[in-house]
Length: 194
Image: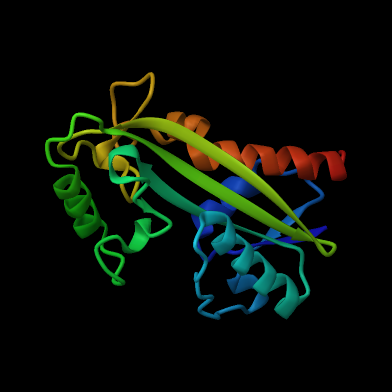
């Protein structure tokens, strides 16, 4: 079975491929010739992931899954949420996003937050949804050089290091994306037993 992951990121693609049953061959958007700018116009992470997966499934006739991730901060009523990548503007500037987040939080005592990843799979005319969540705390200044996005200011519950300080091996076992991907893999493995 060939399955498209709606990404141009080779690292993400390889990471997921290693988790899938051998008989599922994962393809990137580049591999199927999809260079479309798929607009993320949804009001939720799930809507954005569905838009991407359905676009590929309908336009290129491949089963496809897509993901969308957001950081939801309790003291900011769930912001930045669906706008996480564009929190400080459409230019998707990570440093500006972090600066804005820390400014908005200011000296608030409640710094609890969670990362959510939603994966939607368009397969044989049906949509399947898989969610992964990791809770934690937003610290007051950046720490660590690994990861990406808000990782330098997010400490997951049960740890004293930010996502940017944790090794990729640890992060990839506890992260929101890992948890959602695990559910997708379990579903696909049940459909395609080895």
